[in-house]
Image (tube, rainbow, N blue to C red; front, side, top):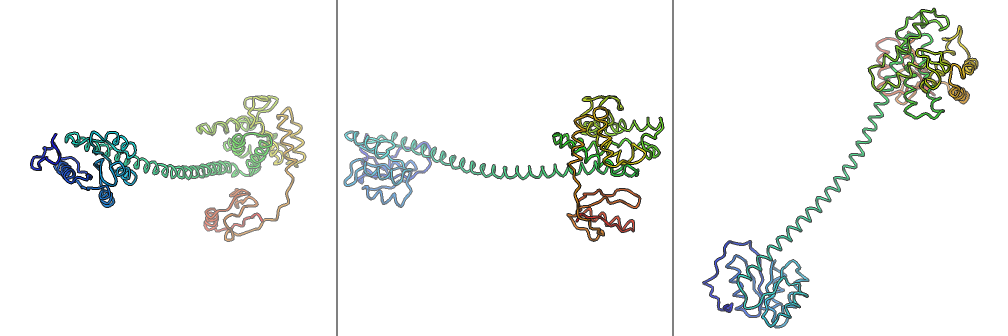
Length: 439
């Protein structure tokens, strides 16, 4: 191979294609060597800087961005080993190539170990090998930059995903709370609709007024005392509100007289109300458990009830509880006797039916519930006109219309919308309403 100093500048090798430009620094204490390298790299599209000492090269590196450094091994002052070691420490992304004679192979190995040299090439060099080394270095650097870019992109995406997951968790929590509130509102509206439906019976007046609500309250207290699941308590409460819904089909003459004073034909009509109530709920899939309780709430423990003459544990537990609460309230209202009974006599009648008409355990729990419901001396209610009502107030007594219809039940919570409806009714009817509000 020719000495690099003798390579004529007018006869460069012809490149196959223009490579991607890269800044190269050539360092050698012999000016003709760095000049030859510069011509070679420039011919192949690589801008090149030159320095004739390590100190000069370090000054250039401090001010110029360089991709590859070609350095001679033997230089006065700081030699190639020391120089490339400094380059590795200060500019680790700059690739390092050592140019050395055959006699300096051992020193080249040391340079590879200490200075992190990418490759060493012997002088005089082979142009093809030299240019191939440049291309390999640039390809390697490109892969490194792409790897770094992808790692940075991955980190950014992971961070974005973490933030998104955090936001998603917040949104899921928020949506869960919204759904829970909506579900609670639906349950409340559902129960309100049931109560409104049950109030239809009270329009018939007489002993039916308030009966369903009282029976529902007693049934739920008994079920709670027996440790029934919340879902079973809720089903029983709804069944109690609707247990007499089949009586809508009965004539007023049947409903106005106590059951013992009904004729045989009227008694047969009356006994049909359990079946009619069940049939009224036939189309409602989620009310079939309630419908079963309505059908069986007049069955007896001894099997002499109606409509199916079920006995003992054949009767659903909710229906057994409902039977006791229903009978107790009917005794107080006079539906089962010529005159209404007082609470003590009504309790005695329930106790008498233990083991025959009623399930023994349920009778025991029911009577205990009545005993534990000690009367509470409440503050007298405040009588307020509709204009004095405020949101958050609660009714102390039923609000009854002039026709005897219960408009609002005791315990009803006043809301802004409800107050507006009350006031609108007053304006339509032309009759002021006075409401009993809990003190």
